[in-house]
Image 1 (tube, rainbow, N blue to C red):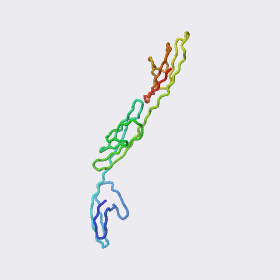
Image 2 (image 1 turned 180 degrees about the vertical axis):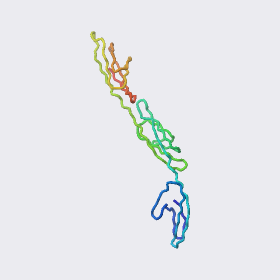
Image 3 (image 1 turned 90 degrees about the horizontal axis):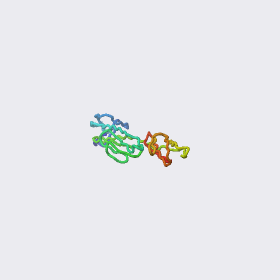
Length: 191
């Protein structure tokens, strides 16, 4: 675009690149020439240079997903310049604690050109469905009871033990904690 001059009765302010109604947007730095001809056939030529500032290249990543044991995720943006995150924040990194889509706008501080990128933070906080049963009760003839836990993952019994079953010889209340090995979430069952 070029700011023009007044020639005769022809006034032009902004001249689109091209001729007539055609317009083009340059993609590289170049020098252009504007030629204006008035009704009398007089012409004026004015060269001008167009500088094309490229948009910054922005990349975004996250170290998710969120789980029961990983309660925050760090978002990282690259591309230089300044950063503006959805939901606030202006650094190259942002820590989030909620699953969702996050967007960053990177601005080239020299040209003012911007680029936008987004990342999805997923969350896996599903709790295992812990179940427990026993084959009791203890009696004079049945001197041990087998406790059985279900729900997958790993098991931790009160008083010790890490298997899906535990044999006890004393009446009482027993607890098993079932841990989902994928996300670290836990559920407890009391017998």
